[in-house]
Length: 398
Image (cartoon, rainbow, N blue to C red; front, side, top):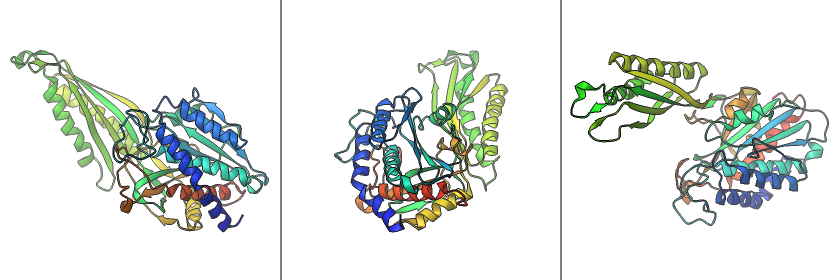
């Protein structure tokens, strides 16, 4: 098929892409409860003549498209499918979430719509497709657990995939622009909590207690020096305490205070060092006052690192797509467990511009007024389609 035909194919499916995205936006599922979304995806794939497989307790879907043009490589294309516990606000759009307190405020509805569009196009192009493409619709990205579950269930095996592609729409990039870079594009993302344990007592008699509140307060400040004084100014990192819990009355010194936070870094070495130093710093400060501090590492994922050859593959796809503009974004300190797929196969995760300031589509991700310029959907299909077709051709050099 010529480049003009591929462009036309993507543009002509625009109404279906919008319909799918809006259906998903009206019916979001939280992480860990994506069965209805997975059922919708499976239904759409079966209409294309595919045989989707359910995974992870019916919360995930995998489907293979076998090419008809001979031997080639197998590519994994991933779309995350979960929503966020946010009450949608803003304009009364016809596709507003119908689930109280839940909305697609990060664009996963668009990711699914694009992947379904790619599936439809590849089914039409099957005679020209070498090798094969595995579509992976992943749950629980927002809680950084879904990718590991899918990998453990064999989503990258039988037969083994040789490359991986994914995209993330980005409201901070204008629609029509596609952001591609080599190396880390998203940071690692880890949750941690520290429990500072002292000795409770009467608020009027602090000398008879061991107050964990001032100890925890000092720890909040001390943890900032792990970035400002222990990390090179040429390396980006974040340590944020997002929750402080302790106490039950104004005149009672509590036994414990719990701090909950997150760490972000663009290298695995820095990620692990920061996580280690949080525990050491907490234990040292608490110990200096005669208290104790236990640090626990929660859910997390490594940085999202793009292989240069795979990034070049996507760059060529963008440059061949009429109306798409190639840009190189700065790394962003959000995280994504697509990184776990990239640890096992070379790949690229790219940004699909979805903002439109003239139309008032400017709200950031995870915001209750988040929305997208839906013209980005066809751009995403075309870029992903071109990259997939080239990768799967044996000896493409990607």
